[in-house]
Length: 305
Image (cartoon, rainbow, N blue to C red; front, side, top):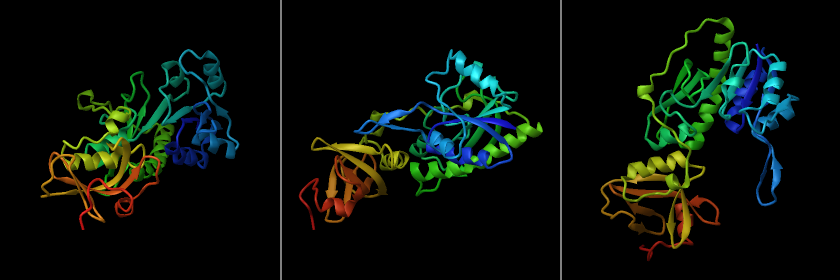
């Protein structure tokens, strides 16, 4: 199969690598334009572009996709059999219909659950015990196309966004290759999505990251898991942003919502139901650290022995 791969972040790399090392012909990669990042405004490449450069794969970086006739002609000239899309932008119909066998996307949820930009985060935030990976044929409406393949993946109690992201990324490579083989053989049956079972996974905003101590501790715990290590759940104390990376639920502790209990080693906060013990924390402008180390230099109240 002659394949063009479209993707941007680190999540896409295992799938890209698997295609590159397979029997299939990787014609090119398409990724987002280079950006200026950091204080020095240095130009940085996407993870996908970096991999392509290191392996001498042609790279295309269109500024826009809709109405970009030059890019459409460039893609047609390569005569691809298939576009494989992993964590990229929304493709217009004029582009995703170019290849002989169309285009498919790898999505990090069991569609139609968690359609949208942040499926891994929302599965954790909502306390799911299971998620998965879906490959589907691209359609005009985002994340609604007919399904090629699904793989269920357990969510462990100790999982956070970082660990689940990495596991799904690695497992995704196998799902992508199996989907390509299915399409090449013609031995598959597309399964339509049931829109009535759909749930959203919108982009994570700063408002979502802010901890509300009035909700149950288990919900705060899951919020922390879903946002750790990035962008991280936070609260404001003495006009400083305090980020929280790891927590435990504490039951049967009589604390009011947002009331702090602090010893030399422990920091516990009251919630709408139960309480939260903070295990890893970071003050604005400081490094991330364990609660005991943090409490040596910061007090939420008069320290109790």
